[in-house]
Length: 361
Length: 262
Image 1 (cartoon, each protein chain N blue to C red):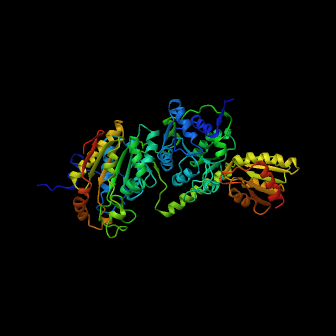
Image 2 (tube, rainbow over the protein chains, first blue to last red):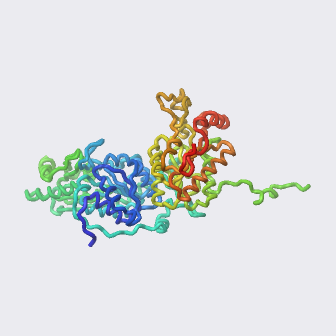
Image 3 (tube, each protein chain N blue to C red):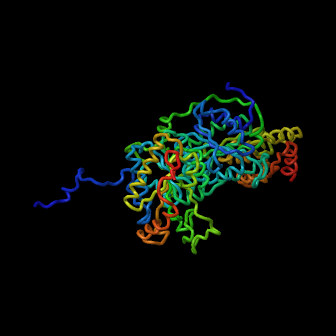
């Protein structure tokens, strides 16, 4: 059993970065995720593992530091919250085009604009549909506990390097700020420079004499080549869709209705499920762990089982619900319920929404 | 007297000049008369002569030299517009033993990337920044740059740069020299053989500083021409540069070994 600690989600993620053998973290303070860089600075990971921690002058600079360091084969991450993640979108588009493996976290707060510092899930579209320019995807992991804030760092780095892609831990202010018991995994040693050079021949680590140089770029002025590159990216996203869908089914065996939720909304919906079942309503929960790739096939399987309706529960005006609708494709009723702008819905109001909006609506 | 043939002349002992080993065979995309080709060449000559080929990672900008990685035959990363100093920071921090440099134009370094430039310099990143200042946006077709001279015409200052509404040109090189994080700051040109020799010496010093782990950024500005953007012949452009750019952007070292000399 690993070391047990009581930690905030943000702190658990920071500690996990050190333990996952990260080479660097580049960040910029923003509420509600500043504990990530504060924890790292206080923990002196340079002394523990040699990991670099640097406070950048902006979110834009931080993501570009990630771009440079990730392109040279190192395990690097950044984190921010909604307004800061908007600033990172340029860099993320370049990272997608140049196929740079990296990890970043968005501890989402209410928007638009400066919005509020309270929790939200309103950055789903930005995360899943591609917040920057161009046709691209990134793997999106949605932790629902402090434990997963830690575990998804390790998983995220592994997926990032497996596919040469950006992996996003899409958290929210609830998960980032709350304290829970967490079992920390043991220290993974940082890769040596020799291991990086051997394992990642694409990385810019200096061109050995008589070898081909490595170029990290998203540019090709020849449109036919650029179309080919885009086909390559799309094939990669298809492969990820086939292999990396992650979800959890809770109480769906006998269910007539299903809540679809992720992150803190999934925790709340689980409680709403219990409240509804006490009233005799057979409802289950599909908790999404990956938002891209989306569990389309699983939702179709639930339709095959005869589920009558799905209630998308999210702290937004209704974003994920669109992907639920696309997956259900008219075979069952789909509705949305969620508070937003920084308000967290209660289990009671979600249960009521099940009765009034989905079943009775 | 026997006739001298080509075979008599093409011998290793007669070699006085050869193609820069670390430049690729790709045809340069620069306009004839442009200074970029020379700046590329002397940069790659310095890397070759110092034996840094295997240890160097270059960062290309957005602008005319966006394709620098097509010509420089070493590991290269292409950065988003203005972000090269941040990208270089990321690489240098995780590979502190490598030599990392950026190659940027005036729009990239002194307009959209001002923040990244100032802060990389202020943090004292141990990198080389090569800054080509031709007072115009060449690639996008001759728009006004942060370094466009007062009264100078461009496609977005067609009646000349009006400092009242468009601001004054930014002497970013003098600005970064003020920061404790810069170790070597110099301004050079590549319009004559003598200037090229001096510029190469400055670039060599910049790379030596990084190789010797000297504290801070080595920053080499090269004032260059843009005959296409300025709508002049190459010779006229060089003359115009000497008469107009040099008085505003004076040649020479500004800071050497961390000490202001100007």
